[in-house]
Image (tube, rainbow, N blue to C red):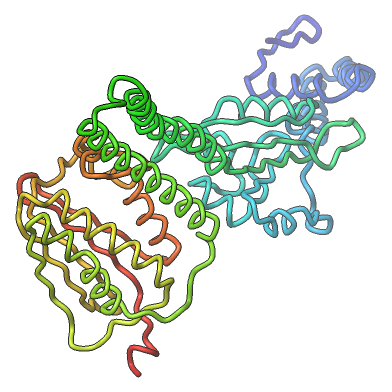
Length: 428
């Protein structure tokens, strides 16, 4: 670009051209015309000095002219120190994960629950750096432009499956009816979705488990009413089978009721004093006929004194009964099980080890699921309901304890119950 004055031409430097462009963008046309007229008047007297004066006037005007703001910067409300809104502390006081964003999607404030739910959360960074869910990012952008709030449900697959509901809504509207803030909160729906799935699976599995003995009973009843009506030998054999099937249904119903009762009280930890040694001795006395019938030797190891903890005695008896009975039934081929009670640090442990065929490693994570069996036919032949280890898991959860399962294929399996000791009573 160049400037001509009285037949002479001067080329403008890039800096001069930039200043002139800023002047055109900043000042009104009337102001620019006035500056040019002033420069022309001076140039009529002194051509060189007139051009210099015009250039200086243009530069001065460009410097003092207000700079235009980009649309997105003008849209974003930034509070000053004297008008810091109280929404930040309010967000931090919420129990559910909550994040407060500016209208451009920048993190303004968040609470402790949000920092645990969303890693790498930091004030002043775009929310897209922390959350990679396209539906949430699209909602934040559209709500920042005036769209109404919405609810987005998504699934996290890593490290485990989690169902999360995100609520995104505008807050603190300005005069243009556009939000100054966007609040983003999360609600974990995993327990609800798992409960729905568990309920469906439970109905399907329970109906399947009950259908088999019911079908057997109906078949034998029809046989006794028909062809075997006058056959005393067949009648006695069928009645024995019917009795075993009825007992199986009774055990299944008892286990289902026990599991339901435990789940209802799982959030209430029992605090009654109990002695683990006394519980294990009583269970072994009650199961000694079963061990003798299966020709399984029971080797025991107990400490010299009691091992006291807080719990529900009947439920802990149920735990030991299930584990010892499983060891006798499924470890029968090893001809021996070992049962011991010990103190380890500040915890009491009940260890049941069998020397049977062991459990394949792919089955270990699912052993405590309801109705899950490594060998369905073998479990039913031995009178199992598929709920024993599920009962143990829920009882241990209620007692704030743990169940550890270890197994090597061909060398047996070890089940360890871990409970916190009652230090005051143990010391006494």
